[in-house]
Length: 132
Image 1 (cartoon, rainbow, N blue to C red):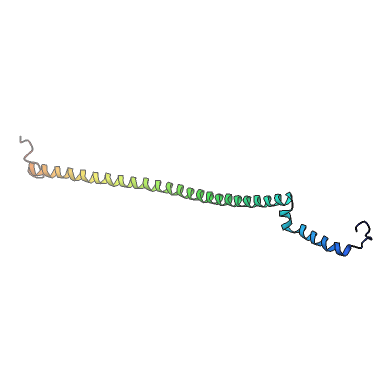
Image 2: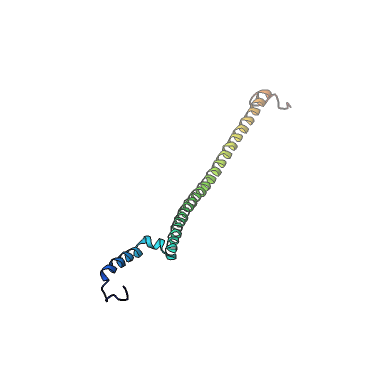
């Protein structure tokens, strides 16, 4: 029949078939199942999804690293403040200890003086002086 057909006589029958084929081959389902191009497109989409996930993970990791750096800076500042305050406290306690030692030394000298006064007879130490 095609050899004896009159030009354009089968357009109506064939146009429906052509329209169906065009719709099928232009659909996304056809891209995935017809040939290697569909497979490649599918693989590209898979790789694209994996890459997006990886980029999101890297960004999250970067945010976590920034948080860690901030915490480290704060900890470092706190360590410097702690060191300064502990140094100040150490000096304060050292001076308190020295005042305590000085007070105890004065009390010891006073006790020795009072003991020697009572042993030697009072304020003038008349029992302990040489008599001429």
